[in-house]
Length: 330
Image 1 (cartoon, rainbow, N blue to C red):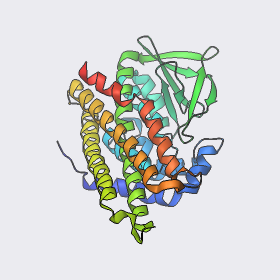
Image 2 (cartoon, helix red, strand yellow):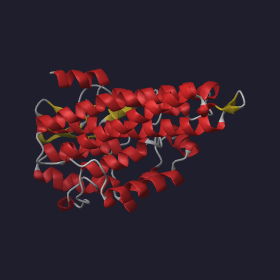
Image 3 (tube, helix red, strand yellow):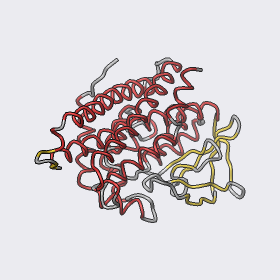
Image 4 (spheres, one colour):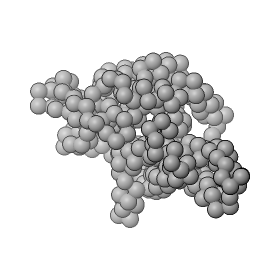
């Protein structure tokens, strides 16, 4: 098991980080989150066309990059550190569902579209669907069948975290076409969704910690920076330790999910364990970020509320921490 990024993976992370630093600052994130599209189409276009984020896990046979889910997880961690609203999570889960359960004809038809940047999503239950109102490719699972949906009526659903786009789908008048094995698609989608949310949570926790540490060096109380107080040092050190352990767990899970030869049971165990720990770490880091920033953190102008909202949202998307632990116990 490797617990470090390869040179190419590190370069990928640095490239995405540099782009997001220029295109996803606080004002840009707030503007994109409240826009009609729910994200910045120009940023998504650059991510797809210049870096190929949507094509990373798509095999070369379907016009993709031919990398793996792990490389996508590297990008998701960087996205998690910016709060930038992005269709990458939903598109990645839908991509992996297609690869796991779709017929060859469906793969040949849909995966090249995803590789070019068309947004995709998959509905696994009756709950609101990620990016359901802006996806060009909509999938769902009905019984044991993977179904492609055309013409569904999508209604935007307001969420606590505006950077996470949700919608309800009305399939009553939609055209439904069976394109593969629903059981395999569902299993893969749930596994990848858990690992992907874990990567986002690690990025978020790291960002929250950096915000807190930077503020503690600037905020002066009793004639000295609050970061010099031992009690606050201990609290930030505890968060740092948890962030690093979360990152290791996330990478282990992502490697296992990406490896076609890995034991499915082991991949599931690592994913549930990593998600449980990382999601709770993100919540802890968000709470400490708010508390150690003091009164300024509860104002709309400060980004601490973006951290708090994202941590809450991630803890609900593909299972709360206690549900991941319950899956391990079973």
